[in-house]
Image (cartoon, rainbow, N blue to C red; front, side, top):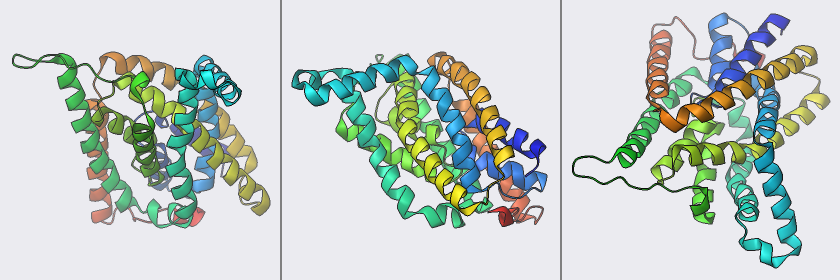
Length: 291
């Protein structure tokens, strides 16, 4: 991998990780369109450590409060009813599905799941799901002539059941094209949560999953020696800087705006991908030799 490739891929990772459009799909597509080798699941996982570091810094006060309360609740039973302590447990509970499925489906994630036809399908299908979820949220918030405004749930309403559902939604993002934030936010909106609550829990829930995945791939890459370390570290730094800026923008965006621009983008990109593959302009396995 060249330094130019790592710069572009790091930029793409940072721009797309937190938007509901799938960073893994965009890394795969960027390489395919440019005629580069597929950066692979290992590169994706390692560069995600950079974007996750941006989450740790942006939400540092929330995270410090949750971690502190969770540890204190282990010793002090009276702390177990504290919302922050409960959030610590809910992040753990919500991380179980992706942990189990990530290990179980590892070979598929690094192989068949990277087929461009599957990516096109998930882009379109999850785009439609996000559009429906967004529409339902907008209807509740706006009310109407014959409807009253419906109050949506916040993170204080989050329980074990909803936490697990969020977790299974996140696990769907193991398939490129689904989008971690897109799946979890859609799930949250369909369960009746506000956009801000769904996005905040989505970002917090991603922390253990992404860091564990990145460290796991880091261990394998170190032992196997199949990663270009200089360019990969460079891409990770780029992803961190860009990712932090995107989080700040996105958290402001969702408080007043609809997800429809992302829905339209996903569907159009999926259709374009099907056309390119269907006309043999692009192979469904373009660039896969890179692993």
